[in-house]
Amino acid sequence: MRGVEEVQAEAFGRPYMLQLIRDDYPLYCQCQSVTDLRRWLEGLRRRVSKNPHLVPKYHKGILNGSKW
Image (cartoon, rainbow, N blue to C red; front, side, top):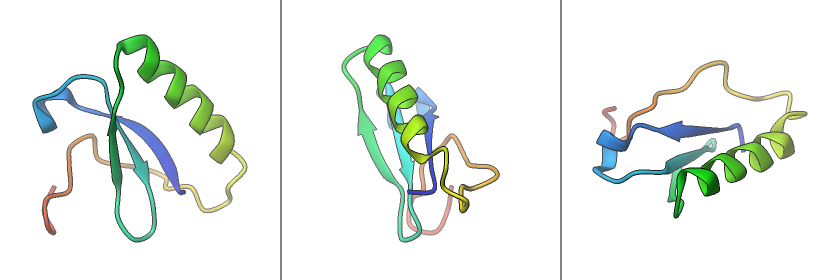
């Protein structure tokens, strides 16, 4: 995993979304509440923080085919 970030609610029309940034494709997950989202982000970021291959930036939207 190369990063974990929040996704704009408008991207899916759903609140509390996050993306797991991977080499092959992003994985999107929806949490049950803003508290749940913050806890997931905090925990997952802690787990990937030592990865030397973290992405330097990301897009808060969704990847639809080959377009953001």
